[in-house]
Image (cartoon, rainbow, N blue to C red; front, side, top):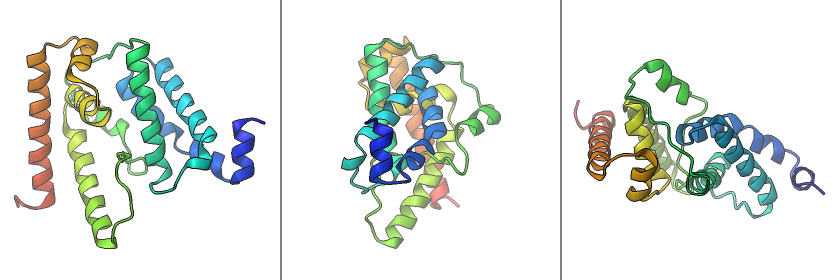
Length: 194
């Protein structure tokens, strides 16, 4: 019996829930992997792993968060095992490129946020995530990509330096500036500097 058939029997809308997130997962994978083929492979492996493990999904987070957690591991594996080269474009602040990464419907949410908090805390967290997303969109493409590699994918500095062909000092400066820009933007967005 295929994974799709097993998932269909256990929950009628499992396949729909999982495949509905495919476009979002593909955009996220393309940010980190050099080729569309590698991104497609990572997303397909993610969807297959989700179908295979649907019975252990604890529903403590949204399906998207769970899938992002799986994809995160697949991306790290692809970067490490396949030696995928990260295509770092020159900093491009074009709004069209940034807008194509995320839409209002496909907002990026880290897998670590679990919605078992009070309604007020959930609202605060949602507001903070919206501000962080806006701030991330304002970062130069290279800074955003390196920041995600370090903070979201959890890659070591040595791995990022080697994969992106950056000197240790240059990488640290880019990450420092990205953190400072995010902090300044988030503080203004949160209302402290009005």
